[in-house]
Image (cartoon, rainbow, N blue to C red):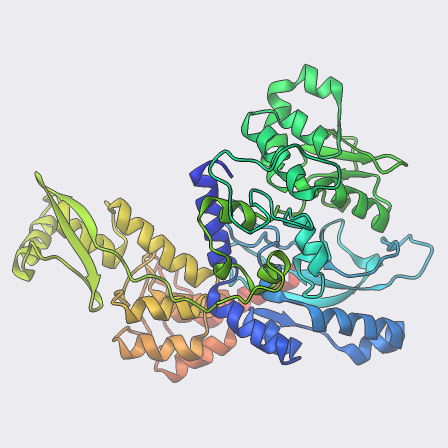
Length: 529
């Protein structure tokens, strides 16, 4: 976490994966003993029938699953699910969540009967609504490849394990003194004494920051294949460094997966690294080969928790931590946590001819103090006749339509708005609209927030957008109306709401497809999958 870009990416992950409003709502429902309500608040669809589990596997197993559901923190879970480089949930991934201490039989050829496992299933595509399915699956019916997350990623009761995973010893956090104050930049807590978890994590980070991934893996409890390290040093270092953020927990994870599934050879999801766990529990990391099994649990399938490093750098405060993380890292401290609204859009500097002008989002539009509306209309007219559109006029057009060129700051703001929409942050989007964000802002495809209703709480968002004057039949650049977008997402509830608001059921896109036709095609594709 030495580089600013890495820290910014982690902050985006925390902000988008489980927005403050989601954390507040899910935490309140969990404290009330309403695990289904907590799931709904965290955009998790619980497809679970506990009486059916009892009928299939017995009352004891049903009680175990029910206990896991009661302690499930779905808003925390979202932070550790596998994701793409764009931070979208990894399409079609299956993630096992269970507190079972015993080995789990897998595969139809397993001689013993299977056991019920609580699993999370991820969306079919990275652009789909980022909703999670929660199901109970027989262990013998897992897909060929799956992910498995330890309890500290999702279990509210796993306080001690969470403290260990986040790199805290009994006395202090990594990069912090026992009184809770962070060290100055470059400071350490001294030598990595045996059993001093915080010092061990600091030592690993120091080795990685000096470009010594092999030494870091060895310090973390791995044996690094000496032939790979010697013969393929340049190639081998890249995947080692890519998985290094989770290094403080990787060796423990390799042993846990080997015990649970008997998977002594585990391959990373990107098929670049393999881990072999010896009988004594010592893991060896090497380059994966075509001979390695393409089945079983994904090695390196867990992202490392970064909150303590962000605290050290001043990017987070203790009061901004997830409540369960704060409970583990600062026991006994009263957290002044609240669901903070996103900051209103800041003024934006635009190069306009030889000068720099400032524009600002306000009152549902992009305000241009240096240009009158008449001047802007003249610029748009000239551009329509083939002339260039530059400066503030280009910024206004880019703001509303997404047309290029798009000034960098406007591109960032638009990316943030639609990233919040993608990840279901209804509270955040509504707060930005209340602070003056243009409700007609368009994404890169020319779609408005109306096209994103399936990702958001449409019961709150649709009335707000309609009141702001947005058309329920507005088209994107492919001719798709919001009704088409809802059909592709298989969201019949949103389709019904749009129809009730006056949307045209016979609207056709640029390829002549109706919403009903897209819905039928999407259902057919889902059945094949």
